[in-house]
Image (cartoon, rainbow, N blue to C red; front, top):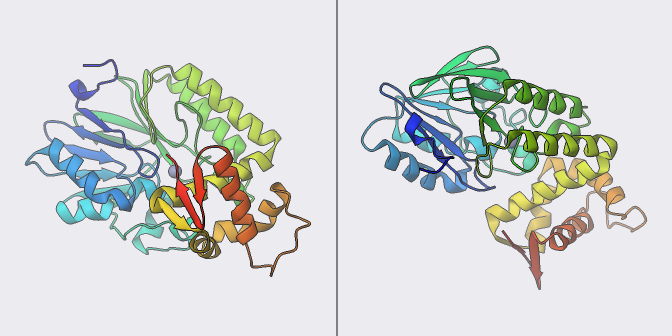
Length: 319
Ligand SMILES: [Zn+2]
């Protein structure tokens, strides 16, 4: 048993990667629950991991920390396999799920996919949830996503932080990309995490960690630098959206990438900002709607940071 193995308290962590969020399966005497289910591309893999750990027993609950496509893309597949599973989503997101309001849910705007799933109930700040044999607290965690929740088990001091805190940073502060000031909210969520004083954090992506103070300090510095230089955050957000597409496609032609970008509201809305950030203001465009040179600049930035490479007409993911 490694210091980071939590199976002795019924917590099974499936560390996935960046396309799919981690999945946390809590197995107790009377309750088997999963928190977050990964991206749709990996739904069969999520199923296999869950079935292997559950053996013959049924999954009782699905809980999503927030409804980004990489955290709830396996819900539909698990619901199909476990027809009696009860699914809870953050309270502010419930109506959007029930109506499958794609304008409110973020999948369309990010150019990502998520198969429709059902939600039985909501949960929110101040609630307690039984996951496995343990009772967990719920705390609102705005910043990365205004509707996200933190889930905390006070006895073992285990925190499910989703994308509010990773070992090395945190997720894009998405509302900022819409012009909604949210760096302060992200900072307040970090304050809240510090006050919970977790012994171990299971993040939405990457390995779980117990040097929480160092991770908190890194996240604070990151938020602070974004707040002082919002263009750096815009650039990070743009690169994350395109990198995510590459993670899913693995390889894509420049033309197909531009076509996808043209359908992706975040990228089209941010095209003027991107032109300014990447120094394209004085480069003539074919038409105001043409974002191919913006995409070329974002791709070049990904290549420079080692996250992608190009080969003729192809853009290829480098993991
Ligand atoms: Zn997220």
